[in-house]
Length: 504
Image 1 (cartoon, helix red, strand yellow):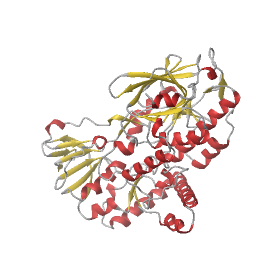
Image 2: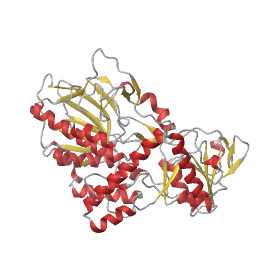
Image 3: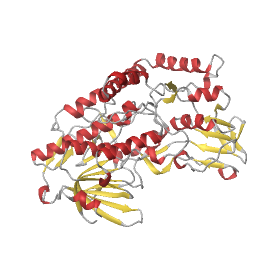
Image 4: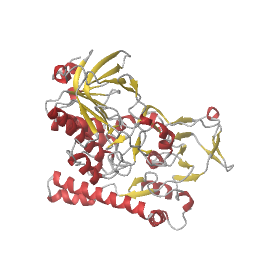
């Protein structure tokens, strides 16, 4: 499939990519597009991770799409339920023939002469081919699928048991009746532990420092009541906005009154665990929302600890030993299995090499535009969800904006759109993500920045982004619209290019 030309190429067939395809189908009818997916199945995160208990860490009324109501009972859903939701979406919008599996983007180069991206795709067998597109929409997430963050703990080779990273969970791992130590205290750890504790002899969470842990009902009773007397779409919309506004209120409260908010979170832990709980194991050194809060449905983690099936140890690893882990305090933890829930490796744009007119793009030097595009990169969108709310809230708005931009380019006959920094006006910058989490800090130098003024700053606010991305003028004087230097786009776009990919 050499040199096929598309209007839009979507990279990634996970929650973001499938949503982007639906929005494109609905808002830009007639545009040729394809979805390329490096793996052999759709689903992204929800298909990649196989560890016990894998589930959403947001409610599905906001993690679900704005065009497709979530109708299952549980608001905090497991991975199979989310995958089922994705498969339903693909079927409902007839996207099966648009997805090309085992197609990994290796590099992409923009040509201003052609107003086209040339994208190199690697097949599962290692062979390469290229496809051209006018707009490249990256929906490949924010972390590496090939490797997680795996610290080189001293003595790893001495451990007689099995060491497992959650990103590469062996489906045949038998932990029944065994002692398990989970290193980490983030969302993965708090999900794993209650699930493993049901059959393991004992599960210990070994954390360097505590994380804020909040219990939330697995079912949204308000939503279930609304469904009884309202149409599904209206009940979903009302529940979605209730959860959006409640989440935004709590986030703003945490920012404005961190001490009081922290006190209430810790009081909730004490209510869960009883007055004799060692609060040192539950009291982080940072303020709420300096890192993402960890959600546990129906108090499952707290219940596992209270039952004695699980426990928390706050300490540092000194070295692995034959039988477990020796801690800096001198204590030892016996283990048959060690799970290194030590985090992700962040990437921008996946592992692909991106270039503009032959010049390599260093995302660490780029400034975000409206949370969708980047300074100096034409016709390039990237889906990055919220850090303080559900990913899909922002993913939907991102896709809507990309469609608005494409339609505006068509209307004006200017097939190139480039976010352009103001000439002669220095732009102050700060990290695009202001989290203190380890996975963010490890990658901070390679992540895009945000500027000191709109539209170069992130909102992290869904209602504001509705105005910003859905309603504000596309031509805001910041995006420069232009025509190609050599070839008019109308002479190269082939409307049936997506069918050519499907027929490959």
